[in-house]
Image 1 (spheres, rainbow, N blue to C red):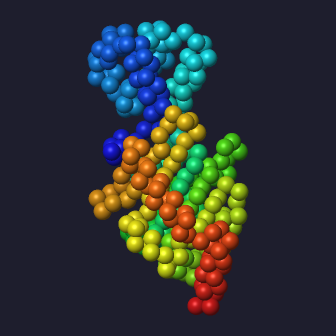
Image 2: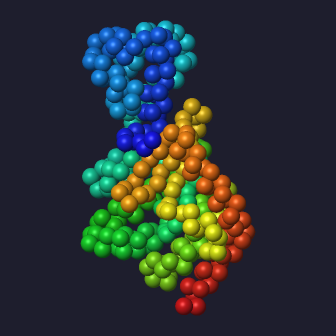
Length: 289
């Protein structure tokens, strides 16, 4: 089932935990609302991760739910504080599309990202010049300021790959045609391919190329991303693009469809060594053209 609201993983985890604690205590929404002296709809919003919760109210719910373990209470209070913190992307709230900020918020909480691309180098691996070239093609009326903002956002996103604590593990499968899709000048494309080759050698980056002759290219109706998270209690989130926009899925039956396709692509794609050879060949072609 598609996600229509995209809170951060911290918000989702807190909301899910509070719901589980209420049910375990044998209480209804109306009971919890009475404890807080609020409308039942407020409790619904809290448990759907559509609203935050004050620490005073959180502690009142702990008491009502019979949560006496100090460590558990402290952990959930810490989670509630973290859920309220604004990410770096908040400063770009007036400059980039809300659906993009929602994606970034989820991406920033991920521990592993599985990315399948059919037409462009993934954003996390783009060079600034390649990003600018893409924007100039997709939105030719963009001002230089708008372009610069998009480049800065891309650079901030990339930091999840190099952060000191638990950098994201990124596994990318690219359609081979991407290596030859001319984006920008030959110099821009060559720089991007060389950067892609260097990224493939990072310990937390796995990169495979799906060769043009593979029949599985016919199964790719568009790019998709699967994101998994540090907590085992958090379900995967799958992101896909459609003709009407972008859709997020978190139901296991839906994310399993994408995981199955990713595994098939993993088997069909070239191994890391052969993939690097294909990238080097594409780099040579940008020189000879």
